Amino acid sequence: MRASKLDIADYLDSNEMIAEYLNTVLEEGENSDVITAIGHIAKAIGMTKIAEQTGLSRPSLYKALSDGAKPQFETIMKVLKAIGGQIKINPIGEVA
Image 1 (cartoon, rainbow, N blue to C red):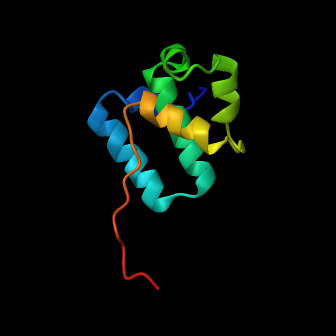
Image 2 (image 1 turned 30 degrees about the vertical axis):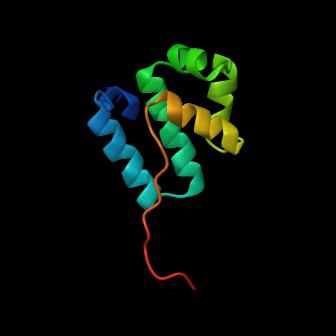
């Protein structure tokens, strides 16, 4: 018997689930994990739709959001906006 590969994008079926997933990765993951998570979310929503909203091509998005990629901040911001997300800063302690 052959096991199928788990695709997290299959489980990102609501705005709440997407937000919970991305917030967890932001809190616990590395930079590369965040990029990969944004890629999973974009895939769950639909790369064609994200490409249309960002003005980037599908191949460019796949490349920018793949494992080991180092996309420009502008690209990440465009994709975050397209997936309905935003960056919000909450203070975590005193300023040094």
